[in-house]
Image (tube, rainbow, N blue to C red; front, side, top):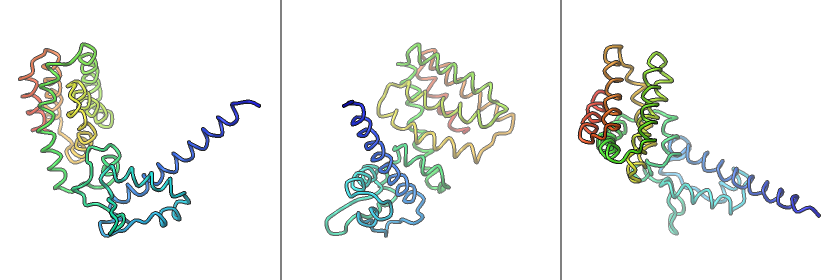
Length: 235
């Protein structure tokens, strides 16, 4: 008997299990973040989720564990499983950031994200100027060239801008700072939709990115930090 058939069947079973788990996480998670069918007054029961998704209890428990790790739900013996308040969500989680990006962000949250960026990104630039490798410097130059080439294509410019800021955080080599890359992307996308720069200010905005890149590649941490602060002021 061929050993490949049992192996293939097991692989298919595991894939189906994983897909159903992900489907439950996606459906419940996006509903919680969008505050549509699920709110902080909602109670989630394993039995109801099993019925809604045609899933076994083991799969549902796995999905609920994932949602709990993201700070979206909490379980206890007396109250069961309930939806958490927004301040308990893990805003550094890439799925939560993606679900938030699909809806409209409150003015309060936009201000808070901007405050975080102004605290984190200048320090990221400072450390990157000290630690960046030759390869990372090359990538930053390449992304900066993409920014210049995309100046008449706003969709391409947005993509290059996100890549630039995320690459800068990665170049810092600081694992804590690197965790902010998804939240930074959310802030950039929100700013881009609400703040389309006229040509004169756009040129200054582009040059501000180039100044950050040049000082990082020149291993000038103080200037890199200052240039990033100036860039975020005009974002």
